[in-house]
Picture 1 (cartoon, one colour):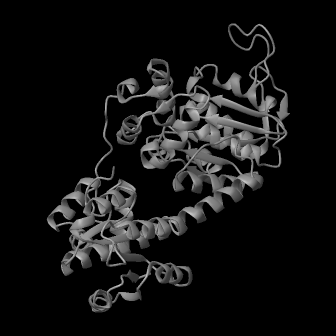
Picture 2 (picture 1 turned 45 degrees about the vertical axis):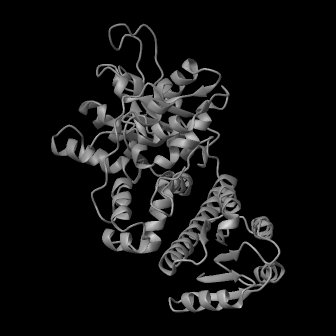
Picture 3 (picture 1 turned 30 degrees about the vertical axis):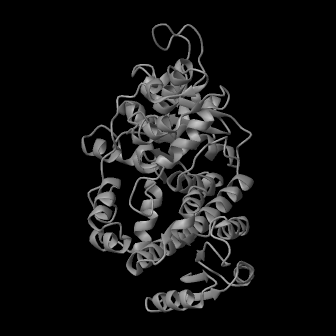
Length: 451
């Protein structure tokens, strides 16, 4: 929306600014009084306002400009306003900038500086509108997802988690085996719970087994059961996890840790539904939907002869990949707030920034443990960086021009003298794309870190 409203009682000022803007493909509207300007704002889409501070010869305090600024802010809090000021009311202009005005320029103004400021603000406002549109659409999608499906209290803020969640809910009623991949501590079991909670057997048992914690000699008995005397220490008949999950869902976590001999028997159960307890010849049947999860590279394990290829394809009818927390950093804030909610502790701005700088090798589990420690050590319920006890492990800085780091953007803006269009060209981005990254990193329109 490259339209600027000029509110100034001097027609020469309005004409000069209108000509300057028109030469750079910016539409200009003019108003001679605050009342006329506010009326134009009510009926015209405007991207920015350039407003004088005085509208009568007998007033030099800038009070009229201040009143106009506050009236504009009351009607449209996000609309950028540039103030044109004389030295006699410079202090008032500075106060208005502190109150939210985009900038102030002294008369007579510098055309190049004014034009650069206007173009930067128009593009930043357009990027903000696009971001708000995306945010509204994202919130709408998430509200629909929460209304339609049982999400088991899952807390998230990233598009990456939303995509995984959407697919999980979509395929939940299919009954097909699902393999959930991702690093330890990322939340794979919660995704499995969501698949079960939205399945046709959601009221039947959900039985979880950590295959990585099973001694190899007991894995078969754990899954399929055992008769008394089937092995040393088996003093009584034992029901296996397949029997416990009959009619429902069996979740096999860390499936890559199953011994090869047990993999063979698991494949048979998946193919036929039949199994035998250890020490028994009786064939039993279980109707079970199997979900599995792993942090291992199963295709590589197949190549190494440590995992059966036929079992892999039987388990992996549908794959859901849950990325590491470092790849979905928008989840950090909502997760942190959820973990701290009951304690009443809150994060300082510096502590929150530190959470976003950490690589989170332990993923969501590590974040939860760090915050548990911090809430116990903090004073007066305010968590400071020292309370987190993090040995900072910065996330890798992107090297691609397609996704420049914060440092690369700041350097490019410095070289370009704050001109966003020149910095964008140097980085190989459109101005809109650069503004979106500036918003993400908290970089102000002048190239300085926000706040």
